Length: 381
Image: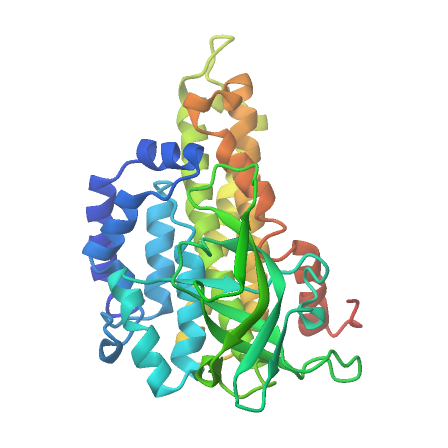
């Protein structure tokens, strides 16, 4: 536990008292940003957590951000756009130039600006090495960006995007080289977007983004050209933990809702919560939730110490996404037909839990990674 954990808990208590689930749920149904919740993140200083004071932050660590997301999501106060903002901030703190840090980080603490993150492409999917978006360096040092990205959360609303592109052609013998990261102004000429029609109750919009001869200045590059893979992993590993916090928080929320319902629902005179067919799946889900939560915080502490967490981050992803899925499934079973009633507010979590087994990375590739790294089994992907 960090020195600032108590402050984070106090801030979250304040937010929980002022913003309720009904408001956030309505924003999700309308596909609108929960402005009131975002403003609370800003006003309470929560958005500044995890950022050093010299860059306009309030200090603290990734652990504090994970804690905040966990606590707020236990009340189903969802703010998914916080994830790309924080996961972009982490690699900038570790790898950006001092000038880049002082330019781009302070506005992310005040809410004046926030980051989106661009990596996913339709044809490459999980295989980031085969992305087709390119940034070609010109004689004057600028880069010309071409390609497209999909599932870009809140791209239009963000001020900047931390974008993954190829500065060298894909080489099957050395696929790790040629990956570079850039800070892209989302309003640059040559950028166009199409809003995606996502069949979920999301309080933010997702976009397909097209880059057509977009000119990037030399100082848009983060780190060394062609050596961005380690920078990328700093972002993706922190993302795993931030999404894990969303998973365990929402899992607790929906499981507690189901447990309360099971205590009173008695179609045959006895509360259905007395049935082992209800009790056991609930107990199993709760066990996975706490196991995932424990490992999540241990991994966050390890990350904050500067240690590699690739294996732990992927194990946390598996544990927490499966915990959320278990909790959502038993909640739907417990509510029965009432589970699809919009007023009950259960179905959105069932859909989200299914989605989080494949996003931000599918569980199958994660299991293959764990098999290789933890058990020494042959690489299968």
